[in-house]
Image 1 (cartoon, rainbow over the protein chains, first blue to last red):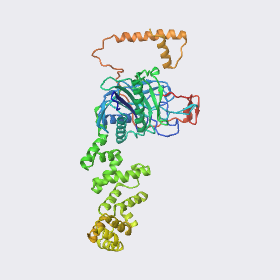
Image 2: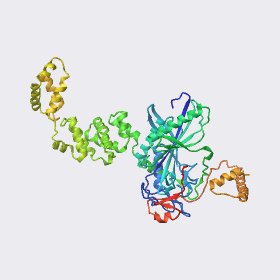
Image 3: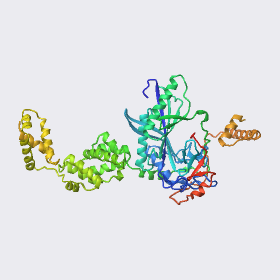
Image 4: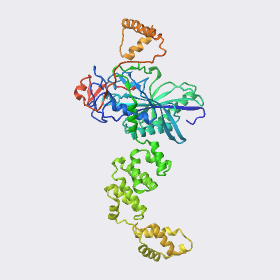
Length: 478
Length: 96
């Protein structure tokens, strides 16, 4: 934070649900929003005698994230039991990894308002998700076990983050990479990506860590930024009044925009981790790792770099276009078809992304194919239609999905670029406005806009404004 | 020897409640186990890598899917109370 006296130290734990076909230790098929307790079996609800069998796909996806974040992949890792009693956990333990995680020592590169930063990643490990509880105020709580056993990776950062802004940038990058890899849909609201924040303050310049507090239940980027600011201010207040920060867990309440204390240090959990006796240690050989490496697509930072070099786009444009892989792919088809990278970038960033926002749809559901947008851009660039007519054509294309040339013909929008036809029109307008012509010749040059406006009006927007402008200058003289 | 507070903490973690006699009995037994491990820890293991489990077997991994979901009625039968397809438990506010 911006205090002279204290430095904020933030570490993040991200839980990401993997998009595997089956759960991590059984064959149930996860499905968000399925009827409660219909996606469960003896293994994931911990019935006596049921044995877990590790899903290969979940390991492959975890290795993929490990490689994408430049981690070391352990040749041998091990599952451990984390013991606790809570109604969302029917086995009374979570199968997680403790002292032998699958991935270690990686990093995430982020762009902040203050320039680029590298946030180290301590570890990535595999574990099973718990069930989902719903609480009715003052009434019983309800439990759905469908989520039990859905594979999670937990990505643990080092305490390298200093502000709420950086925390959000880090999370956005992690979300972006998960989505590029296609291993998690990264939906904070639905909880397929969840984030816990650890925060402490220390005197500026100190290398020791202060007592940390934890915030859970942060289900939007805005909540994370606000929650961090709120907690930093709270801790600063405690310290400045001469108090000591207690190790507590806070819950973010989105409704009131406040933190609610959940648990204090006295009740700190004692999880009694021990090696999971039902699973052998996980062995990952070089061949497996090499195979996963081949599955990794071009990642956001590489793509951004290529966009800058190949299409000569700015940092900003490359960043916006590469935020989502599907948008970047769309842009590339448009740019390749038009041969006009910057124009294509502008269209995708303004018109296409604007339309997506208005329609509330993802690019994969956008009704206009990139080849057709390319066709439209070329029509405008070649002067066949005016820029404003281009907007009308675009609007029509969204409605009908039609080819731009057909739309132009249908709406009669073809630009008048025939000099003779325009000259006739210009003559008529000059004759009808002698006074304005006089004032123009006396030096009121900005009346040119008025004249061009008249020709646009008369041609119902079809006149080529550039051409009309030149004809006026020639004819009005002065 | 474990203290009474430590035994009470373990009871709490295990969700069990011991009466006075049982508590004394388990205090002795648990203390003996801890003492036994303490003795083992004195062995010099320098030069040995820590291995929790050594077997000649390779872990078996599951590929693909073969179903196996239970019918919901059978699932809900496993607990005393349910409501609208959910398990019903006493109100919980504190969350792990």
